[in-house]
Image 1 (cartoon, one colour):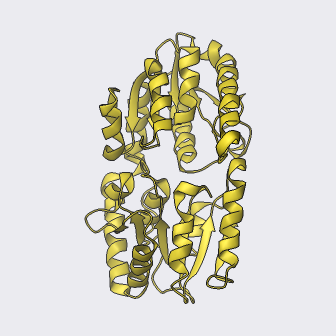
Image 2 (cartoon, helix red, strand yellow; image 1 turned 45 degrees about the vertical axis):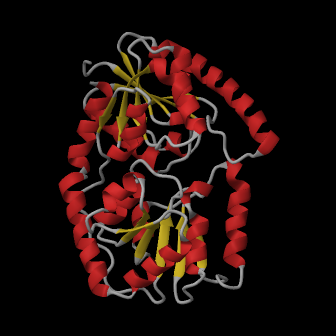
Length: 361
């Protein structure tokens, strides 16, 4: 692929979380290399953060959201219509001979199948395939997938089992960066940087901290419209007597501002994450991270770079938080190991060019 060619990125959401941060970095890297960049995504924070030279093709949201029962069936039919509409919007671009198509999310994959890119599509895999819904989407989209680029070894396993051509290219974060942490805040603060959606495990964290009366919780992140009921449930849980006054919802905020406020960072996802950027960001700043023992989180935090607990186990999470908060030496050691892990394996100056090469090479 020549430096003068076009890279089209397909995204299912206009929100910005870890996957979209990676996408923005890839767009910057592609432009530095002289490529023309186009993105098809819904209107929203992602579109507002695009470089001035990137063309934006507006499409509708491509996720199912948090609907249940009959409403979920209706949402699925609407999603099919949005996939068709998005395919029409991008077809002329993806079929141009000098265009490479990069799909940034599982729920945008069917768009590639429907518009049939000339060179096929590269799928940047931010989701660990572990549900029937995901497998159905991948099975439908498979004819359009030229290569699946996984951000962790754990996420590559089910893709290879499904017969997809897979390579692994790890996520990265800026390095070197300032170290945070040290003396505990009064009272100590644990934080989570993640969209307020059920599988991220916020409820598990709240139930854990409910048993730790001297700890505060801060939750940083926005939410999808379909997750309104879940967000309301979290606010109701935070208002109960065992947590009242100890939980703050920060909404959208940049990672560095949030991390400066925290003593321990939690990644409590109940389903395995491919390679959570928020975990790497916390590790780079030397904050101790407690994460669930599956997916890319296991790879990031293994061998002393963090603390791993069983998914969905609020008692184990509470014990881990109490232990880390109560041991200054351990917090320092965890921070040292985490920063070494980032410096040696996840420096974005090295990982980003490799990731782009795997996607468009």
